[in-house]
Each structure stands twice: as C-alpha cells, then as structure tokens.
Length: 375
Image 1 (tube, rainbow, N blue to C red):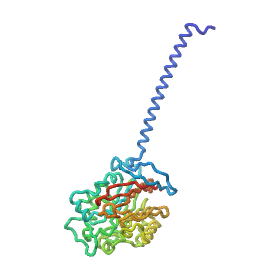
Image 2 (image 1 turned 180 degrees about the horizontal axis):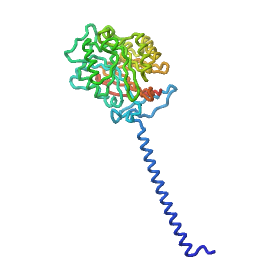
Image 3 (image 1 turned 180 degrees about the vertical axis):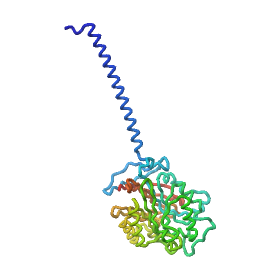
Image 4 (image 1 turned 60 degrees about the vertical axis):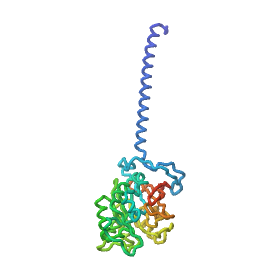
C-alpha cells in the first residue's frame, strides 16, 4: 500500500491541526484554572491571618510553652475591631495596672491632656481593656477628702470620655482609693459609670452589692470578674448600708468563686494586695492567690504594689502578683509596669501575652512585648 499519497498527506495534516488546536485549548484552560486557584488560595490565607498587633518570629519555646522575649518597636493594627473581625467567638482582653488619675494628673486632665495618648493605638487594638481605677471621681465641689488618709485622689468627670477614647471599658474598683472623697461621691461615681456604659466590679452601694461577681458575655463566652481589696479597709470597706469596696472574707470569697465557676466559662480574680514597692509577693498574697485557684479562678491578676512582682504557675493557672503602674506619678522604681493580654478561644484562655510598660512624665509611653505563653 502507498501511504504517502497526496490525499493521505492532506488528511494527516488536517487531523494534526485539529489535535494541535485541542491541545492549545487544554493548556490555556489548565493555566486559567491554576491562576484562579492561586488567587482563591491567597484570598483564603488573607481571611485566616489574625489581624493582631503582635506578629513576631518566636524564639525557641521552653517546656512550659513560654516563648522568649522580643521587643516591639512599633505597634501596628488597623482598628479597634481589628482582632475580632470574623465574629467566631475568639477575642482578646488586655489588663493594665494601677491607674492613678488624681493629684497632678487630674490637673493635667482638666487642662486637656490625655494620659493614654502615647498608648492609645495599642489599647484600641484589643477587644476589651481593663484598668484598675485607683481614684475617686467627681465634680470639684463634690465630697471632701477623708481625714487620716495619707493620700487622697479625685479625678474630673471628663476622665470618662478619656477612658472611652482609649477603649477602656472594664474598671476594677476593689482598691484603697475609691472612697477617698466619701460615700456620696463613690455612689455618684458608680451611677455615672453605669449610665456611661462601663463595666465595673469590686465596689457597690452596700456590702452585698460590692461582693457581687460581675458577669460579662462577649462573643458567646461568659466572663466572671471578682475584685477584692485588702488595703486600708477602714477607709474603703462597704457596709450594710454604706457604699464601698469588697474585702478579704474567706467564706464570701469561696462561695462567690463556686458560683462563678458554675455560671461562667472564664473566672478572673483581681485582688488588691501586697506590700508597696516590694518586688516579691508575700505569704498573704500567696495564700489567697492559691485559694482563688483552688476554688475556680482561671487567672489571678494582682494590683497595688506599684512595682512588677513575681509570677507563679499554680495547678496550671497563672498568678500575676502585681502588674505595677500604668498611669502614675512615677519615681525611680515605679516607672515600669506590666500589661497582660489574654486570648479567649473555645471559651477558655488559650494564650497569655506579656508587655513591659515604661512610664514617662506620669503617662504610659513605651510598650515592649516580652513573651507569649501557650496554654
């Protein structure tokens, strides 16, 4: 047979052309599909990236899941809602230390200064922010400083707007300065906080009110806050019909923690205790911090000492005996504080982040990331 006839050659070229066209179409379609998949993959990655201020390359972790310290020189974020855009039930909360907003700081607030100006972007990057509100608050002509107290503080009403602008919405009132200007001023302060949308705990209109566990539900997780003051109780403790703060009462505390553990997903205890300017916790602090954990606390975050104290891991829970200062008329050893950021995931604490705070001219100035603890 003769295959190489003119007719066969024409047929062969025709079918070869069709095959080439089909092959080119297939190649083009495959490239287009791959490009779409790449774009889709990029979009998925972008949506899953945590919009978090604390992006960093961790060093080697220890057996306790603690990552070594690293300094953040610049805080980056997009908005106050940047951490929680997916509404997936996960969120972050920041705890600051002692916020003393009276005396010279109150005068500066009256003159238009904002104590949180240097750290506002950092605070706004967290979903919830706590501050130990270590002062009374009211008009200039309201109340009278308690006699016998070495230090009495009062801050003006415009402080509430400053707190709001700094994204501070949760206030700890279990401390030794909330009644510096009397019961009436404290009662009005509580009303003002409520009417302005603040969540507070550790103080109330009477003993029963002061000892109430404060519950806050956020993103489907129920948080329980319990604040207890152990300093200058004679000036600050609530009574049956007198506004004031909660205090160290073993029976009440154990009952409240039992209630909180049954009612909430995460139980947070904020005690006001310890020795001022001592960088080491004392036996009283250890006794009660352990008691808090034994009775249901998921984390204990202490206030009052005005310096950073030691940290302890007890029965798998973390105890911070003192965070030191945040807004404070600083001295040589009181110009440093600690911030604690906790991440809530699946209705429990999944990680803890620690930041060192440098105070300059009485205001928080520099935020340095120290380490992360995976729970």
